[in-house]
Structures are given as C-alpha cells and as structure tokens.
Length: 97
Length: 203
Image (cartoon, rainbow over all chains, first blue to last red; front, side, top):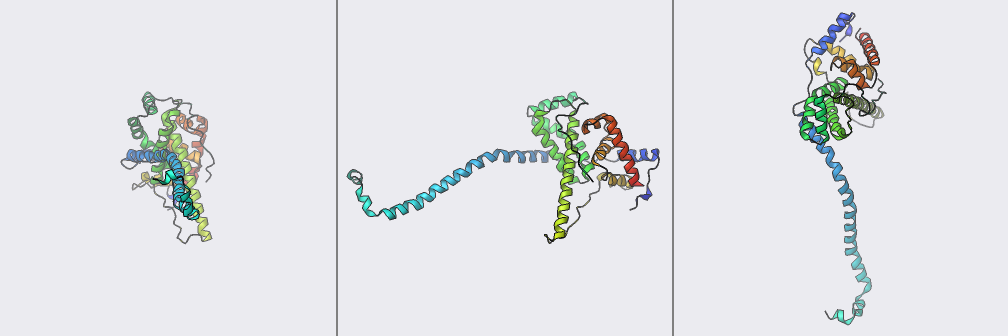
C-alpha cells in the first residue's frame, strides 16, 4: 500500500492523527495474566533451590557407585588370588565360629 | 536500525515523580513479601507495561513475554527499590529496556537464520517472522494510524520510546525524562525529531 494517500502536512493534520492514535482501543494482555506471571515466577525460583542438592547428589551417587563396583569386583579378585590356604591362617578362635 | 543506547540501572536513576502514597504502601508490602501486594501490582500496571512493550515489539507474544519478565524482575529486586522515583517510572524503564533487548535478540536470531540458510546449513525453508499487526491498527478505517505505527518501528530507539510514552501512554515530558534518564529539553528534541522522521516516512 502506498503511503502517498496520507501526508500529515499541517500541524492540524498531525494533531488529528495523534488524537486518533490516542482514541484507539488499548491493547490488553490475554486473560489470567497474573496466573501466568505467578507460574513463571515459581518456575524460575524452583531451579535455583534445586541446584544445590543436585550438586550434592552427584558426588554421593558417584561414591555409592564406586563402592558398589569395589564391593562386587574387588572382593572377587581378592578371593580369587588369595586362594583357600589363606582362610586356614585365621586364628583358631575365629574359625571356631 | 541501531539499538546502541542502553538504559542505566533502573534502581539508581529516576529523580522526579516521587512515589505516590498508594504505590509507597504497595512497595512496602512487596518488600515484606506479600503475594497479595504482588497481585495488586500486576493488576495495576499490567496493561500499561504490556502496551508499551507491544508498541516497541509489535508482537503480542513477545510483549506478553516482556511484561512477564518485568513483573518477575520487580518481585525479585523490589528489596532494592528506594522510592526515589515513581514505581511507574521504574516499571517503564524495565519494560522499555527489556523490549529493546528482545528486539536486538530477535534481529540477531533472524540474521543468523538468514546466514545459515545462505550457507545451506539447514534444509528448511526460511520463513519471515510474521509481522503481527498492532491490535490498535486492526480496526477498519484506521489505516492512517496503522501506517503511523508501521513507520514508528523505523525510528531510532530513543525516539520511538519517547513517542510511545508520550502519545500512547500519555506520560508528561517530566515522566518521560525520568524513564529515559534525560532532561525535559532532550525529550522535546526527541519528540520533535520523531515527528520530523515520521513526516518524512509518511510523505
């Protein structure tokens, strides 16, 4: 569309255009705007609270996993290399049980 | 279009329009963490903030996004509000600065998408971002206003903000000066240049 149809040359025309602008119905956000703001506020604040436990959880998970691997693979390897003769070397009072 | 100017920190600047008694009470309640006060704040200012963002962005979705961000920032930083300026001034500062930031980001994203499409990095058709018409301009018989609003986006950022705050939000020169952290004569100059530019664009 060409702009040549309207040229606010005079002050009166310019003022009339601005008056028309002010008389336009004002835009509004969609209904339940506060609900969306509140939900977003909660969403933005929750990760910040959850950040610390995650950092704490990761080493804990790694430690548990490492202990589990040691328990499963380490004991078997020791048992395999030690052989049955080592078990006979325990003191007699322990073997009595 | 250049968006080189940046608004100063909102909490430090405004020097006119002291906080009204109603807003002062609202701020005090907000600083105590009242959710009811926050709801009141949103309801009181949501239309003005949304309209300002919409005028600068021309996209209802982006305007909603900016308006939400403004209120969230207010909630998170209200403890630092010292009441040296009107609450509305602070809100308008946040709205205009965030809207300009959104626009810069959208422009950069559009350029990057265009660049990658030229390099053939993406095998998808590059669509133009739809230019949502300003709701105020959708009414039949309002073509003059629509053309004015279309050209408004081609003004330099400060001129556009001054024009929007003056002619759409109907703020006083002093209030606009507080939002833009400048002087009243500077606002007059911005509005004069905006009018000249729009005259040129509409001619």
